[in-house]
Amino acid sequence: MARAVVEALIWEGERARKEFADFARSLPLTVLERQVEGEQGSVKGIVAHVCRAAYFFLRAVLEANQLPVPTPGYPAIGNSRDLGELFAALDDVRDFTFRGARVLEDRHLATQFTAPWGQVYSCEQFLEHALVHILRHRRQLERVVLGAIKSWEGEES
Image 1: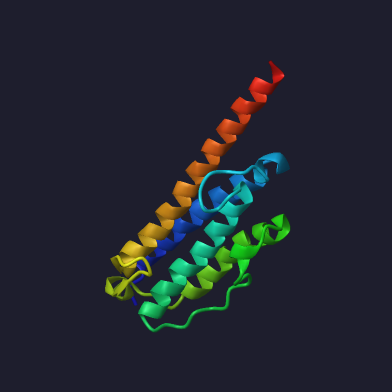
Image 2: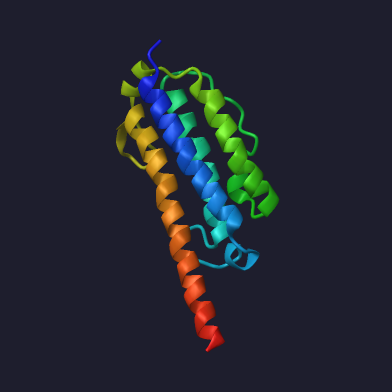
């Protein structure tokens, strides 16, 4: 059973998830409640979106290969704005990923499927997309925080 590529993708995804979670946890409540442009509506909404998407990406890869999908601890997290639940879901994403990835082998990464938005991916490309998705939202949070700091500085003048 060859798993070098699977393990690299899973561990890099875990690194990105942990950095995202640590950064989100470090934010003050005023920033977490801050409204932002886009579908997510708030910083907490971005966190919920990242959790929901992380479950989705791995589930899609497992289903494309007809492999068992573990049960997520927070299947409806996209609807939640409770901070405790959001941060617990970020931790559960790690466990869900490690449980689900146990059955993945490198050969499964060649399987192709069509994403709900119509693009055809190999499973390897989809796991890479999942990794970059977390990084993009980490950068989005960094921009929000930078904007919040600038607005606080303006208020003190």
